[in-house]
Amino acid sequence: MTALIDLFPPERAEGPIEYFRRLSVRNGYADWLSLIRATGLNPSLNALWKNKPTLVDTLGLDPEWLDIVMPPTAAGQGLHDPFFRRTATDAVCPQCLAEGDHLHHAWSHSLVSACPDHGTALIDTCPSCGETLSQGRFDLATCDCGYALREAAAPSASPFERWVSARLAGQMRPIEGVPEIGAPEDYIGLGKLLFSLAIRLDPTAKVKPGKTSRPHDLAQTRALIESIRPLFEAWPQGFNTHVRDRLVAGNQAVFSPSGRLGAWYTSLHGASRKANAFAPLWTAFSDAMIDHFDGNLRGQQVLTPSPDRERRFVSVAEAARLIGVSGPKLGAALKAGIVAGHISKQGTAYTLALMDREEVERIRTERAHWMTANDAAVAAGVPPSVIAHLTEAGLLHTDDQWSQDILKGGPIEKASAETLLEHLKSLVVPREAAETLRFGQLIGRRTTDSKGIRRLYQAIHSGEVRATAYTPGCGLDGLTYATEEIRRYLGSVGLTDGMTLTQLEKVTGWKYEALSHWAQSGLLKTIDVLMQGRSARLVTNAALADFRRTWVPVSDLAQAMGTKSSALTVKITQHGLPIYGQLTLPSGAKRGGLLQLADLGALIG
Image (cartoon, rainbow, N blue to C red; front, side, top):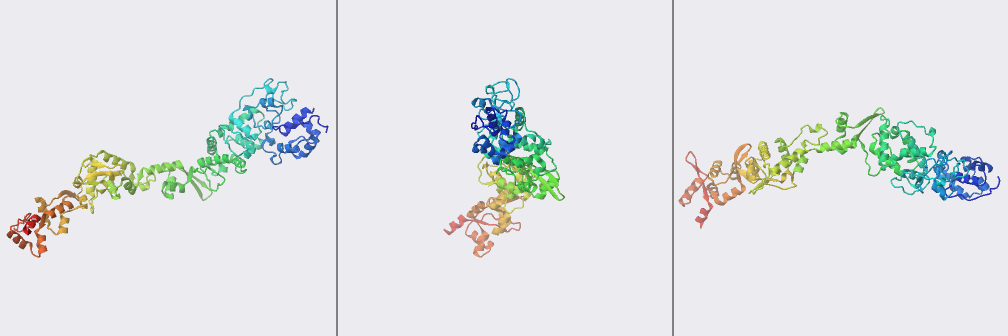
């Protein structure tokens, strides 16, 4: 070829074609195609990449620069992807042209619409004549009409436009409000990723990528970029919402990710997971699948959700574990339509059943309104038998058929127990009492007087018997009652520290009629109580101790002396000692005589 008159080094921002255009202008060639033909090469991108040594020899180019702008391993990727090269018009930044009369390689990419350096939008029409900027114009910085493009005013570009253009150009300066979806080396594939997302934005549209053209001008570029901007807003929520909408629009009869999402999923997987690129984007997609996909994810190890992400749809077995019921029971409720879920048929024998975590949580919340008797006892701080008697007394709302209702976690409604406690607390009348019993002690030892217990509980509920105090945080057992009042309704509670006259007869051998006479005479203190619905007299341990400190039955003294009570009575009379508490029988016989310990002491003294 003819030697070049003006040979100069390329600028840093230039690509090979941009440099050849400037070189052809400075050396009198009609265009860069003519320049390349003069070297004996075919002026196509493919031919140029294959014949770089010829370019070095004929044009005197620096081999190192040529390897940078025409990298062997990057052919067809990033800014060098021929699919995205603008072939009819130029897009330029007026401010960049004012700083240097050369075109930037990045401007030739059909998805680049902004200048990251100046934050302005590129222009591809002349502000003076309104014509598009032809790639065949002689002066790169001037329109064919003579207007100096460096003087044009360019509007500001949106943040997302600047981000797209910067990343396509290999610049990693942060753009406020726009997330990073990959590492620096990942963005070489950004053009294909964004283009694929844009052309498949409508999940119902049928797309043939090979027949879908790239944007031809900046207006089309900006429309494309604007269409996918919502996917990256409020990251990652915008993308999450897009995946959700695609899942809803997909074939609901298909329960695999690829089947439900189709070519969109295949394209995204190829550009990110398969290419080992755009990890944050794939994580956002995985999170969306975990959140919204109601199909089969078994074996989908390709998903890489955030570490703390829990899948929204869970299997029936997992849902049963979370709820605390058996799998068959939950499955039966699901089939019966009692709870909501998703059941599908795959193949001839495989059934997939999934439940939304919101539904699982709803069931758990409903079941938490009910509790078992043991749980109620623990919450109230009383023995389970107390809960049973409260239930029988009708003071707790229960359901005997609760086990057949999956929405109930036990037979006792929790709210009724809470209401009962608040009601009884409202009846408290603070006062002093000689003896008190906690609510949990209101079941007499060794008693089977269920009716008496129920009557007592009903009297407490009605306010006939009121607590003397309440200890906060102790449940029902925080209520204390005067023992004397409780015994009027349930004498068996006194059996913890006393005995009835019948029980005392068995323990001491004293005759019942004598014990009854002593009680009537006031020599033995008793308390009138109800036992099994019948009146009874109770002798407390304290009352019995007082009796023994004062009196000695003649029968006990006679037994100790090895004689009969009648003979000892004669001797006592002879000594002038008084005998108390004798009961005269209809036959004239006397029983139950008592001696005062003080009199015996005086006799001994």
